[in-house]
Length: 202
Image (cartoon, rainbow, N blue to C red; front, side, top):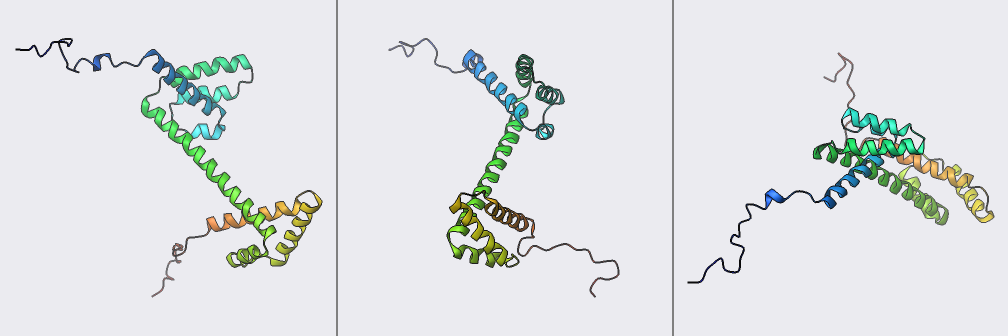
């Protein structure tokens, strides 16, 4: 009868594998570098944002302290200390910090995309007279004569290579319009205005 273990090491079980599943030195170095980089992102972020990040107070304090250090060597040593403090965080605490930073980046990308959209709309106003008609349909309260003057002046600025005064003013008008639209209630959204006591409709 053939030996079923012939050619094998005597056991096939994976029950012993977990015991040896510790991070390699390379993996530990990678994790350490990632935490150091995360600490660096926090140091380079605005102070008011850092203060709002959910993290242990001692970690926040060393990050805020590092922001005040201008000396190169002092800052380098503080960054090493930050790396050490970051390694004391739990996986959940690190995940929360990462999500917060990703939220900042997402907001920044959205802001940049919105500004680019406004720039494209301004350029269209200069290139196509129909774009002004569309704009006035959306915002009939705008001063049409003022806008036509600005568009004419902006075209002249570009043609004569002059400072873009009117060009910038058009952008500001579009930006203010975007803000007003964002602040206005959505269609169908009820504005909750409490009637004074004793004056409700019967």
